[in-house]
Length: 112
Image 1 (cartoon, helix red, strand yellow):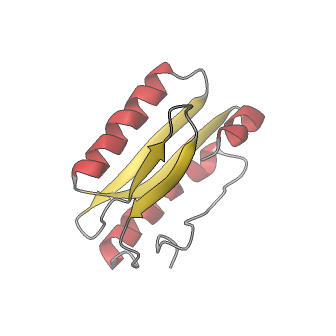
Image 2 (cartoon, one colour; image 1 turned 90 degrees about the horizontal axis):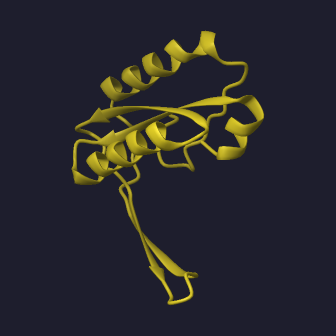
Image 3 (cartoon, one colour; image 1 turned 180 degrees about the horizontal axis):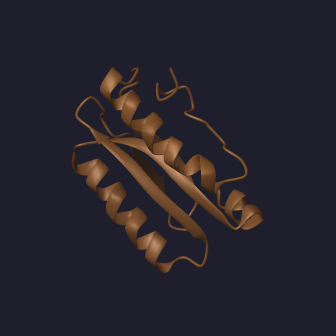
């Protein structure tokens, strides 16, 4: 979810699939901290599933703070049926609360 959406529409709900792994745990911690400390109203609701391996993005930053390159460690695959049902249910509960829904999975298998 891009911050611009939340500024324009005042609140946003980020729904995604993460793995039951250390990277997924890190994402939950970061998201919780962001929700507690950000002036933007962004709510995160992650579906944790054994079939998912959470993507890791490692950035090499130079001394001036510029990103030189990024290494992504990921496994691209379709979610299993159980995870798909969980995601659909999670998205469905937000439908009455929003004016628009933006869906993107960067061709990673969330949308099948």
